[in-house]
Amino acid sequence: MPLFVLRIAEDGPAANDGRLRDGPIISVELERGVRGFGFSIRGGQEFGAMPLFVLRIAEDGPAANDGRLRVGDQLISINGRDTKGLTHEEAIQLIKQHPTVRLTVRRHKLP
Image (cartoon, rainbow, N blue to C red):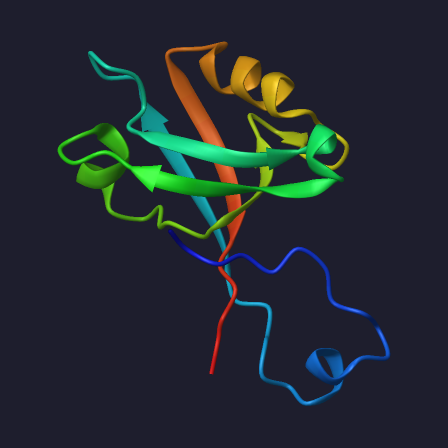
């Protein structure tokens, strides 16, 4: 299971030594397949305000076939809606709302 960074103290060593850096912002649009969009998420307001992250990508699903979404990507927006403050269930409902989902994700870089 991947390890996710939930918070970085502004004055802590991780913020000051440059090891963890924000990576690129990536836009992904996926069409629903027979079994959904082919990815699962983790996080939400009910998990101590944990940001929403891609937890798994299903083999041969739309997300895997597209190739842009990766495990560990942080969801910034879903169908144009900012994910800050969303519960896990609200995020799931936004994803399921249409036959196409538009995601904006941030890919964090590690050294």
